[in-house]
Image 1 (cartoon, one colour):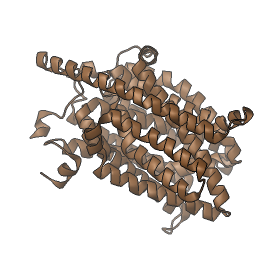
Image 2 (cartoon, rainbow, N blue to C red):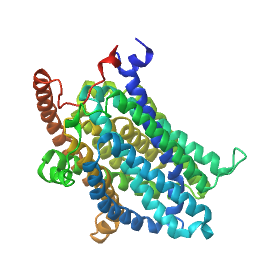
Image 3 (cartoon, rainbow, N blue to C red):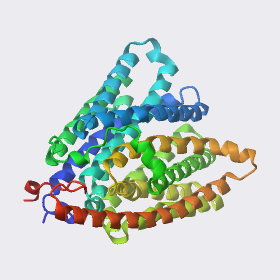
Image 4 (cartoon, rainbow, N blue to C red):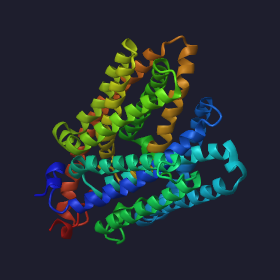
Length: 446
């Protein structure tokens, strides 16, 4: 058994699928993080006070984009719409690159704001589609063992993308790449992600009709109706909403503490950088050594409790000791555990579901509900101030509600997993075309 198999608890034949999936996520997040610093700079071009309005605009665009995406999923098979979504965004990037290169003043702040909203939509949709495919191809046991290392591919892509943008935009390598050049580089990495997806898809025979039952149905409203009818999906949506609101509360607390702790822009930039370095180191360590084992030992239901409980403790600590060192401790632990452990566990929640929920309901939750949480979180301080409620009290109350919901969702997960395992077992014994997620093909196991 190879060292990789020992680390990831892999079984024979799973290594190639893991590597292609991780490469797919690597190139996807490389493209996102090549552009993310560009988005952040454009978002504050006329002051940070515009960010709440940009987030609100993003939420509205998400609401409009979801029915269009659902209609696309309803008409095309997975082997077509998954790369099709990525090609569409790559084509958009070519258009933005041309506009930034040739318009006077690079299009001004108006084009910058349009790009900010576009990238916020692009970011969530392509990552949601990626994880929809992962929950389709791998079963629950494989997800517990492999999703952490697949996420590690994305973490490495984020580090490479952000580092490349810093070097290429600052001129440290002797060449200063303009914004349009960064966009073209992101197009290349997006297309490399598509190639990895297609290679992975061929391993699982997505290009054949042998698994037609795995395709989403023709009703574009099915995903929305599934959320309306399913308490399980409603709990996932509320979990996402409360996570995002708590994250935004901490983001605002972080800005206040850093502003009080450091005077100059350079000192504040260095402070944020120290937090990011700590997050990346912890994330990679957990993804490599901890995630798969923790998911197998305490289960998805146990892992779902970790981040909410840590958030309650962290917010309480910041309310009592609002120092920079406490902020670093809370943010590094919370963000590292989110990326390495909570996110893979949250994706496993969709494995027992059908294609309508995985490709339609999931996209709505990952995009619109996520951005709704951003908007609620960013406007919440204004509301609680009007009600004379301390922000720290509102944040702790939100984190407490999230913890209670995580416990309830964990019980639902256990019931859903048991029912899915029983159904998969009975289906596989009576038919060679099971409704359970695709497994690694027999020829890949040898």
